[in-house]
Length: 199
Image (cartoon, rainbow, N blue to C red):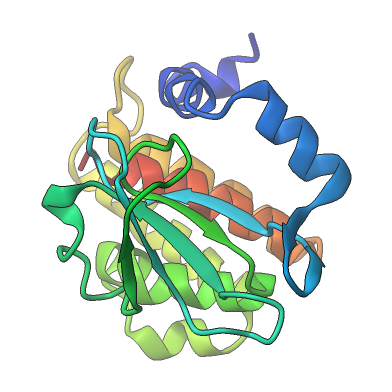
């Protein structure tokens, strides 16, 4: 195992074990089907720390090809996420843990969502920082998170904690953005978002 992943591998395994191989295989080869045809799943997010199974779905605005995103929620959290407005549909849903989001938006829209929902608040940066160049914005977020680790005296310890893991994934998102790959940057921030639930 690459030492780069020593502090986050448990979290990644936890996430991976919730996603059957068959789903990954299907999405990679065929996308997800809607009545309007094939769609690409651009981001898979886990926005709640909840062990319950979903019993309802909440979905974002229709894009013409289907909802922009679809979230799976348990009864306790069905009304608990005001930052994700959209109609709630109780009833039979696929077997998913509570808090899973299938996001079909463009990478830049997903990045904006991360900034709106958690990254701006965690980094303490003004929201407007994330309205411009994503390489610059994520670089500034990394600087803030690294400074926090230094202040807490955890940057060079054997167990730097969850904030270190979030900073690492944000740094990887920054590198992807610098390479012009906003989809990879959004994927890294999705992992960071899941980790940040533990802060």
